[in-house]
Image 1 (cartoon, rainbow, N blue to C red):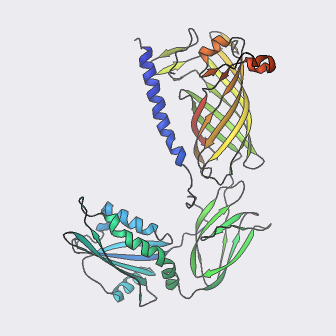
Image 2: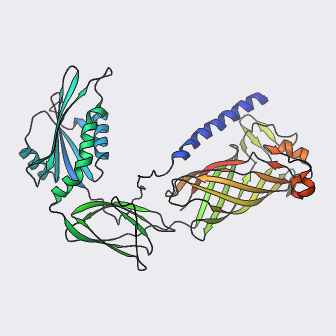
Length: 440
């Protein structure tokens, strides 16, 4: 079957667009300034103060008390409420009967919760009235007492809007509620044993504490209380979690997992041909050396038709009996704590022809020198997307053929060749790679 050049062009453009869309998450891959890396380490306990959330609504079916867990809107609203108090573990329940604070305290205590919250909805024709109270089982007083109304919009009740005033109130009140639930606030020692020189952020601290030469760190903090902890050490993956500091003090051991010395790349060059690279980091997380190859034996059909006799393109796929072998060295331009990392490298590539009884360097363009500029996603993850642009200086005696074979070839002005001999070689600006980088 004969496939037209126009069909191949449209197909390649469509595939390229699809893969570029898949690359969009690279721009957002990583931590924001307030986000804690999701590293699960058994040495950090996940203690949080529990809160019983009791929701009263006359429309709920008494035979299904856990209906909140089956209603996506309410479940999402409870998640939003939890987000405003990240140190609390909120367990929701439903009821149709009004209860008093004494009953709430007793029910929370029997359920192993130190805090309670009671929310009552009363739906009217144009608005929903909300009554909310919250407190601790150690106190008879309500620590939150809130009444408000939310108008019913044209689309009906917005569950998220119903919770927003209570979210703001809880966000401000829950530290004091936690302290009240845990008892009188004093000072206690937090002792951490970890990697020497590790930086540790405790709670909302902007400045990190640094472990000494023996990997020990001691702090005196308000207790009892629950704290977020984030630990970073050069050459190791970060560790995050929550700790419960008791009145008697707490001692924990944090053993971060070392980053692998090797990184492995799997990518598509120009959205068409498979590429594989291995890189070895040295002198910390900033310098690296790499080696890899790109094969043209099988790839997606390129937009440009190959020169006569250089390869075969049929339908969605293209084949050329050639492979690029490359080596290089480079460095990262940004710190490893960033949301994403930028890097640059310099190297050389040799092109092998291995078909039709021939195994030798390409007689037309045997070698190139390339400068790669790249960006990779969140370095706190083992796997992250990366994108590289790699303009190449093509060493050739046949620039006319190279112009047809290489993507985006640019010729420098002829008068440069007299002052800069290398300037007589063409520069290919169309090389780029999109792929996945994995670091064990």
